[in-house]
Amino acid sequence: MVTGAGSGIGRSVALTLAAAGWAVAAAGRRAEPLEETAEAAGPDADVLCVRADVSDPDDVTALFESVRARYGRLDLLFNNAGTFGPGGVPLEDLTYEAWRSVVDVNLTGSFLCAQAAFRQMKRQDPQGGRIINNGSISAHVPRPNSIAYTATKHAMTGLTKSLSLDGRPYRIACGQIDIGNAATEMTERMQTGILQANGQLAAEPVMDAADVARTVLHMAELPLEANVQFATVMATSMPYIGRG
Image 1: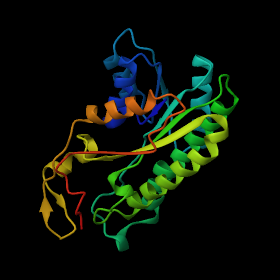
Image 2 (image 1 turned 90 degrees about the vertical axis):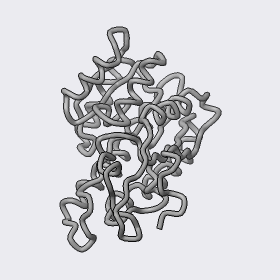
Image 3 (image 1 turned 60 degrees about the vertical axis):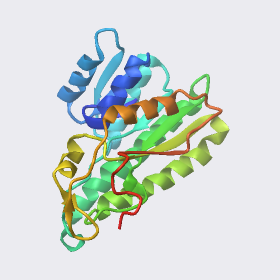
Image 4 (image 1 turned 135 degrees about the horizontal axis):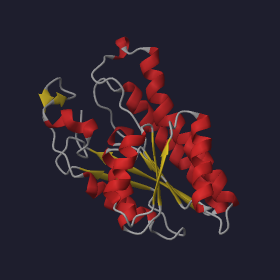
């Protein structure tokens, strides 16, 4: 299962998994982009499109029921759905509604999907599976005016560690991929100029989302006795080491 599979990193990962022979459940808030992902995967790919808002518990329940009905089990969840929220808004001007929107999708949505995956992986036979959480460079260091996104990505690291610990008795492995400047809709503004910690605007390099997808595939195809706990994949020259 790939959440946020209608665009960006989610679409790239869904296509890469499908090309490698995985049956893929593509989840997202809008049906049309999911269908475009399925079409791009080709006629021989097994792609199930499910419209779901991961911040809605009922949607998440229905999503996992659809996957169970189609496939009978779940071997991989890529917890990818996320939002940056309003960009460039100073802390004192960030509305409660904007804060909640980011937290609900990035953190609560990831928890709800991980919880549902955990329940399924515990009861299936053979038992177990893998959860890969999409963290971010912002799980380590913030950008200016990004408090909601940064807080949720730091929290994602705690979610990953707890899932890893609680999953051990059930052969449930959990890892996290921290991604920096993959070329997606979310990072378009980075290529033209984005606020840096020193107050200047600067264009930042980006990398192909397919490079991220290959890393997710590697993590996904390890035996459950092995796990990539944390991986950082980034545009080589982006300002991460030394940011701030």
